[in-house]
Length: 190
Image: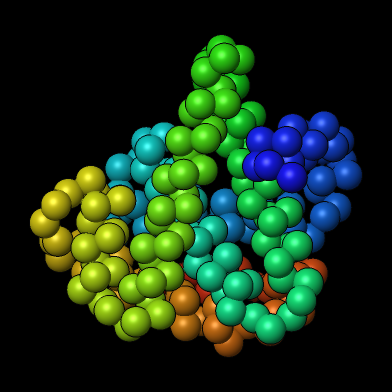
């Protein structure tokens, strides 16, 4: 089923029904973690629509990477549902911003393409343990800069640590949304 048909399907589901789905619960936990004010201060991320989207993409990419690495056959469907919920929320957000119906699909498509590019870049550098490449990808996507700065290197350490913590999370706790996402994405201020 094409992405946008799945989005329409996800949008038709009642919000009460969605709230009971583990994918929705996990998405809400990732959303909350991505809005931690300490992250914006520590890594000098713009507290703007773009900055918040970038941080949500980062946290969702880390969770999706963990799901993809699992050998559990349920993860593929769970990941797809999580993606659909993510972009149904983005669709709603764009609509609430007053974008007309004709512009919503284009904006959401651009956002989903941006997310997929980030997921690939972050996963590639994390898998290769390429900290400088990860810092470069973060500088480009979060700071919108061509040159890596200290804040990007610090953010890459945060990302690598969160990815490692996620590797230690039992997949079952992700699939039933019991995982303590707040502690996975806790900022170490040492």
